[in-house]
Image (cartoon, rainbow, N blue to C red; front, top):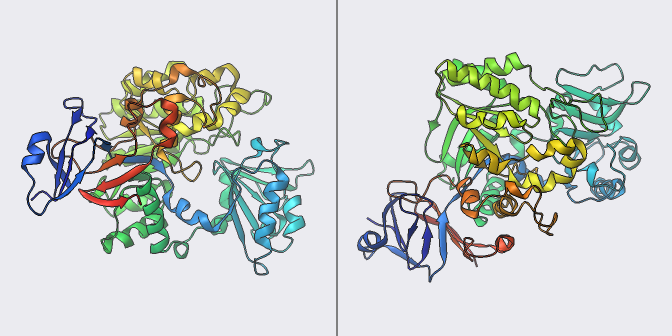
Amino acid sequence: MTNLLLTNGKIYTLDPARPRAHAIAFASGRVIALDDDALAARTSRTEIIDLRGRAAIPGLVDHHIHFTSYAMGIARVQLDGARSLDEAVARVAARVQTAQPGEWIFGRGWNHLDWTIPEFPTSAPLDAIAPDNPVVLDRKDGHSSWINRAAMRAIHLTRDTRDPDGGKIDRAANGEPTGTLRENAMDLLDEKRGFNAASISDEMLLNAIRAAHQLGITGIHNVEGAVSLRAFQSLRAQDKLTLRVLHTVPTENLDHALAIGLRGNFGDEFLRIAGVKMFADGSLGSQTAWMLEPFIGHPDNCGIPTTPVAEIERIARAAVGAGMMVCTHAIGDRANREVLNIYEKLRREGFTASLRIEHAQHLHPADIARFAALNVIASMQPIHATSDYKMADDLLGARARYAYAFKRLLNSGARLAFGSDCPVETLDPWVGIHAAVTRERANGEPRGGWYPEEKLSVAEAVNAYIGAPLRENEIGDALVLSQNIFEIPPREILQTRVEQTIVGGRVVFTAE
């Protein structure tokens, strides 16, 4: 029995065989008919939505997100948008005023490159406002933490503490830690990163899911660990999970997962364990992306390989042997090349499991065609291109031409899968679509777009966000939009609002 019918609209199916429809019918969570067949399938019990000429598209999937980090972020000191060190410190100071003695204070979102003096921070200004409260503040990219002396004392960090493999403790000339931990050095904080099972409530997660549905997100690929998976399982057990969640396993848990017999795609349509997530390097902003050549102005710095290449290969081979997807974070051109080399070995050995590179930000031109040749998905976040373009120009110079190479990758035959990397960037997928189509920020900078030859069409950008086209027997996820994004000037995409979100043929959000 048809439970939902959309009619009288401009329905963009994103199915090349049948790209447009005026009506669509849903039953048992799936699309069952289009156009006149859809109208004929209605019954007296069918819910009917008259689109009145509005546009509808498939539901959007965020292919790379840290969802529970986003859900918990509201309770943290928010440092996004701070334009100076003093402004960032002032926000922390306001939180200190309400803290109990000795209470840990957590925050996120600082970006020293946005400050009037773009230098990595030290513990001194935090020590002045919080001498007794340990403070841990994650950089916007999540690859560096800024801490104070109270936090150093709590984790027993001293000048004698060695840099861990794949990590760096910033130090003064006398060897004393200055207050910045990069990459694997953040592991010294252990559970003092503010994330634990007790931190995530069902209500907190449901609020975040409602926010996602309001933006048109019907599914996510969540790159978090056991705590997150447990939280989603709690909602699924209560039949409250309306967001399709594909979850990864962190590398430290993979051997245990395989030992108990876990294989890829374990679960159902709303919660599946699909693969493993690991890191090859750091980030551009923390200057830890693993590069073939040094960063401009830093002749001794080619970044940090956070996981030995041999270990990446071991993990990847173990995962594909169990039919699991492999998702490897690679930002720098050296990191991308090394991961592609590993993936090439696996393909030659006959493994057909899904292989992805997360971010694929900075590529050597010789490696671009390898994505399609090896059937490697480029899991990218368009908002990074517009957020980071000035930094990329400063640190990479002419090499930035091959950064965020959306169009070159697509033209080579590679598959793109877009996401947000939230909470590193905004959850809003329309910001990402706008960035992919215009290569501009919301304020129009840089005028005409940064390396405009890498712009995508609206259809190409949306295709990289959808989970499945709207066609018979596919999942019934769709959005009704406030404006037709395929007919308006690209800069107006940011004004798009989702009026209804449909998951599994059921309306889960309606705009007021």
